[in-house]
Length: 176
Image (tube, rainbow, N blue to C red):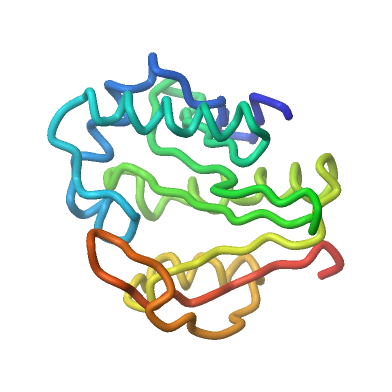
């Protein structure tokens, strides 16, 4: 699996422990973590643990997470990737988040389009899924703009921050 993807303004680089300081700053912001399945971090060691856990999934070909680097500044501005890879069924689930100072600049769209291109054209996947909390209107707008199809609400389907939550399922197929 490729460890780096490039777009016009971004480099998506496989997340490494050396990224922990930058990612800690992002993941410690309660506005950023509001709709992701982690509590806001309070210590950089927590970021290291997350990165090491994700690396273990990468080693097993089950997931890959990229640090999103803004090319112009060479700063890490967020992360994205395939939260799960299912090669038997040719599908993956994506996830993403940006530091709030980078919201509304098209960076998330650019990163997701790179993930879609790689998934459909290099990994030959058939389906990309995104699960979004119904209250996360910014992410829902983004997925709809990228022509993901709303499939329904998975009621109390996953536990997030010790509470079962509803998730809206969106997908995009290779053929559309």
